Each structure stands twice: as structure tokens, then as C-alpha cells.
Amino acid sequence: MKSTAVAHANLAFVKYWGKVDSKLNIPTNGSISMNLSNAQTVTTVQFDEELEEDIIQEGEKQILNDSKFAKRVVKQLDIVRELAKTRSRAFISTENTFAKGVGIASSASGMAALTLAAVSALSLDLSEKDLSILARLGSGSACRSIPDGFVEWISLGKHEESYARSIANDDHWDLVDITVVVTQSEKAISSSEGHLLATNSPFFSTRLNNMTARLAKVKSAILDRDFLTFGQEIEKEAIELHAVAMTSSFTQKNTWISGIYYWNEETIKLIHKVQYWRSEGLPVYFTLDAGPTMHLITLSKYLPEVLSAIETFEQSQTIHVKWEKIINYPAKGARIID
Ligand code: DP6
Image (cartoon, rainbow, N blue to C red; front, side):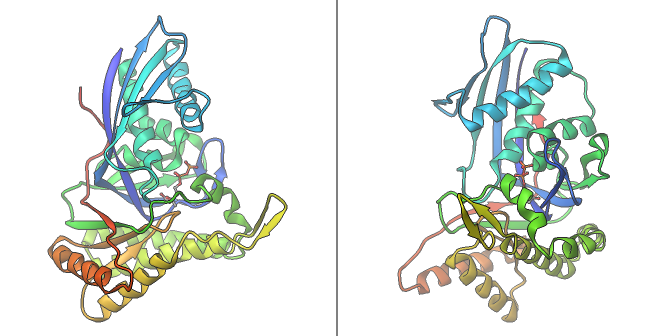
């Protein structure tokens, strides 16, 4: 009745942005990601017939059951309980190795670890595909944290056919992600909200029309370890997603808003710098999710050079900055660590 699971957050190179079904988290397009070695969630789930309600602890802190986070956890556990035909409540203890709101989605690793721990504690015998589908219900990107290494989320529009599978193991390619945390402040519009606004952009359909070709190109660049094609495609992809977000106008609290700007000044400065570093011969590209945090992507042999370029840049600022940096290599998928 008790199990502990670990799952890594993942970074999408071709991103999930827009849903055809927002209850089931079925995306409008497939996506491709890599599990991040230094961003993981460890979750223990212990079912107990005596408990009257689920008790959730995050690190040392007990979480109030009417909080947004607790509601998401309970909703996901209810789905697993229904599958196992039990009403038993659980004690859930969860911990991230990385801070929330730093631009690494904790919902992916969190939901993947929670789902696997609950499934295993209730001795449900599920395939990796079924686990991925189940994790997706908690948070779309969580389905990609189930399989190993480099992962594709294929989605044919149907619940049973929207799941992630590995395209290459974690040791396939020595790619590195340097997560540069340019601000600790929380983003104003969550990715779940952003998904719903995506279709407001006039460029949404253009992005979708190019998606099949992009997915194929990024997948084969990973399989061929073709860093040049890979880097160019993922950088274009990130900018195109943000172009959609920036043109997804909406009205909030009676105010018209022209679009979602996830970038801040630091993000823009780093974008210019990455372009400059490349012109100087340093092979480095960037991608970003629904927030200002920059993910610099390079090969491990260039890591010292990229780190030193960032440091020189930090020191050159009129007001000196020292950003938190998290170095991530490809990692395994979710697993039980009892
Ligand atoms: C920009 O998986 O967080 O990171 O399904 O509503 O929980 P929900 O959304 P979520 O969206 C992630 C969006 C993204 C791109 C990506 O990871 O593919």
C-alpha cells in the first residue's frame, strides 16, 4: 500500500501549446522533449483505510486541502482510485530537487511521480503507455516524464492514443541544458491558461500547419545527433510559440490585453547574446517555456565555454547580476525507488 517514485521534469524542444480537449489534456500537436537530470520530484504515496481525507505534505510543509495544488493532487489520485476500485485515502509526501517557479515545470515531474507511486502502491499492473496516458490527465506534459531520455508525445486526437514514448535513451546524446533563472517571480499567466488562449492568435494555424514537418526534422536531428539542424529548429520553434502567445489577445477583469509576454528584459538580453556567441563560433541555442527562464542548449564539450560566456556577460552588466544556473543532462523516465 506504500510506494515511492521519482520522475524528472522535461524540457520540450517541440512544444505543446493548445489543446483540442482541455479536460483530458489532449494537445493540438505532438511534441518532443528531454528529461532533465537535475530537476526531479520524489513522491511517496501510502494508502490507509483509516484516513478520512488525503493528507499532502510538500517537503516539511503540510498543504491545505483547499489549495489549488492539493485539489490537483486529489483529482489525480481519484482517477487512480477509480481504476483500482478503492476509496482508500492516502498520505502523500512530495519533494522537488528544484524550486518552483524557476522556469522548469514542476507539474510534469510532480504528476508523473504521483501517478506512478499511486499506481504502484495500489498494485495496478499498467504498461508504460497506460501510465503515460494516466499522467497526462494530471498535466499534459507529465506524460513525457514517464519514458526514458528523449521522448515524443504522439497524439492522434483520441484519449487512448495520446501518450509519450521514448525515441532515444538518456545516454544517446551528450546534450546539455543550462537553465538560466533570470527571475524568481511567478509568471502571471499559467501554461494551462496560455493553452486556452492560443487559438486567439492569427498565427496559431500557421504554427500547426508547419508542425508535422518540424516534428519529423527535430526527431531525426536527435536520432542523427545533428546539432546544427537540431539547434536551429528548436530555436525557431520556441520563438514561434512565443509569437503565438504574444498575439493571443484576451480580456481579463474588463481589460483588453494584446497578448502574453512571458519574456522580460533579461530574456531579451540573453537572446541577443546567444545570437552573438554563435556568430563568434560558440555552438549554443536557446529555448524557453511559458516564462522568462532561458534554457541554453549545447553539447557537453562546449559547456565550460558557455558557462564562462554567461559569467562574463553577468559581470559586464552595469548592475552586477548572478543568475541561478541549473545544468541538466538527459535523464531516465519515472521509476519506483522503494
Ligand atoms: C510551454 O503541461 O504545464 O511548457 O496540461 O495544462 O498542465 P497542462 O499544461 P502544461 O503545459 C506545458 C507547456 C510548455 C510546453 C511543453 O512543455 O511542451
